[in-house]
Image (cartoon, rainbow, N blue to C red):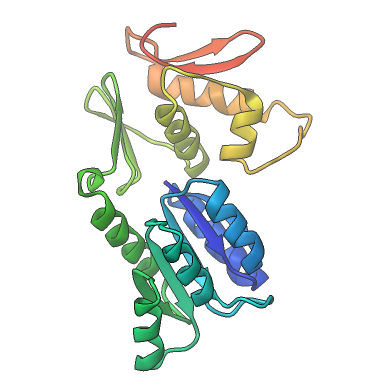
Length: 226
């Protein structure tokens, strides 16, 4: 699930990005209205979180209104320190699907995100990914193969989720660095190979059908066939 976060407060943005990433969301962050609008038009996402108070000329609700007038139907959660009834009503009438006031508890934010995603796509309510006899439950953060639980660290879970979402496709080390580690340069380490080895040991050991394959010189592939 991809989320566009438009938030200019650096500490809040880091807090939200870390928490959302730990819960399996891929987050793209913009800290101005202009950059947020550009990203909303250019990059597909499943949900947007927009702060009301932004540093440039447009406030958050103006972005929401602009996007709705352009026909964009992506669910939008508005964040704001303005908590009065009039402000909350205005936020919804301008096109927001939900309005959450600061300060807030992170579990409530997650619950509101899940509710918006269910509203937009009821079929995806269970949020369970599958390949062969391997299942990945994004809500409970649990993985199983052939009915047996697999214990995964948070980074391993994110790595496996990315591979399952891209099953039967070759993914490169660069793709994994950017999408799972949020690193946009070559760190010059073998961190990916180490994590892939650990993950392969957890999901394939003891099973006749291997799922995680290394494509020499290219990358990796999660699939039934090698």
